[in-house]
Amino acid sequence: MVSENIRMALRSMASSKMRTFLSLLGIVIGVASVVAIMNLGRSAAVSMSASFDAGGLNTITIRPRGNARETMVFTEDFSYTLQNEIEGIAEVLPLVSSSAIVRYRGEIAEGVGVQGVTSDYFASNSLEVEDGRFFTAMDNLSRRQVAVIGSELASDLFPAGNAVGSYISVMRNQARSFEVVGVLAEHDTSQGSSFDDVLFMPYNTYTERFRRTDQVGTYNIKTEDGYDAVAIADNIENYLDTLIGSDYYRLFSPATMKAMSDEITGTFTTFLAAIAAISLAVGGIGIMNIMLVSVSERTGEIGIRKALGAAPSVIRMQFLSESVVVSASGGLLGLVLGCVISVIGAHISGWVPSLSLGAITVAVAFPIFIGIFFGWYPAAKAARLQPMEALQRD
Image (tube, rainbow, N blue to C red; front, side, top):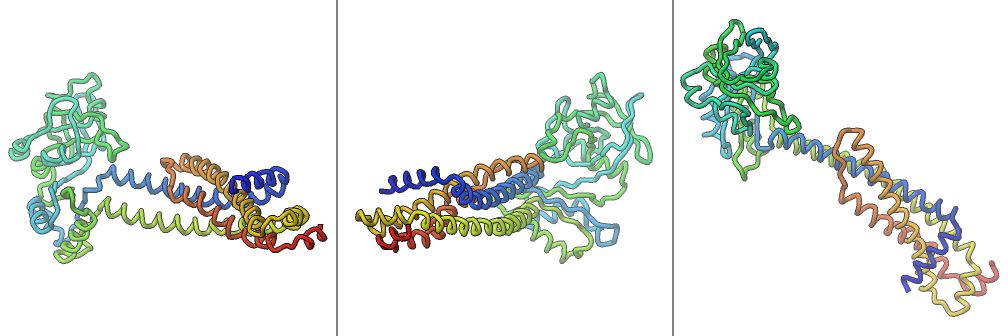
């Protein structure tokens, strides 16, 4: 019975191409709009999430703000204080940084990022050496003038290679000689910040040779597995606000930013999809009007079928099936069109194309619902026609 109604609906659509086109148009536009918006929202969320993931969702960064007396608490010892006060912190790595001129014989690199770090920093950031070694905790403790340099900086200073074992001059206020003990493997910049043009030296060496203060420039915090990084960031903020006040530090948490981004993106996408969904309702009204016209044009057919014994429920189901088939066909076409638009839009925006499961639900379920809801009245009207009345109208 159902298959017969579908076949009759398809024949009716084929015999009235213009009417079918007008019926489909509103649904296609409505579904395509909703699908495109939801897919683009999903693509934006996935791309931003990947960016935050690359920064490390289990990382938190703290930087002192200004030079007020309150910021004097930010010393190397404060690393241990944070670990003792805040539950869920795996490690706190102090870091100081600046820029300098680096020279090797006739080769000069200006504006090189110089970072003073502890020996744990490299493993924490999943860095590897291409040649040589990382400096050790003993190098840091003894304040040795050793350096690990990025692959790009090594190429600039040592075009012929053989950087390890050479002595370079690092000029910041005054020149100091450092032995290159390691060259980093080229870093994948898609996974976060590049270290290819950076020079690393032991933390204690930096503070003694260039800074002459025990104040830390940055704390890189790693949270323990199984702990909520957003909650830990909130706990750190509450602790620091109580200790020194919110004006004297800056805290950055990729996990917190990701949570905020997901919420904003989700709300914005839902809002736009709701606006686009209005066109689905307009498309449903269009189907109802076209179906009413179809009922008027086919009163003779209805009268003959009723005269031959067709029950009102059979007539109702016939026109309701036609309405659903038209609406569902528009939904499928809209799904394809919406996906094409979203893929093009994602590529233009530099996002990773992504398909929203909600978009598939909209494209499949909503057109069927609209077909039933807006097709019910024309179908019921057709079912109520009496045989003689229908034949006389025809």
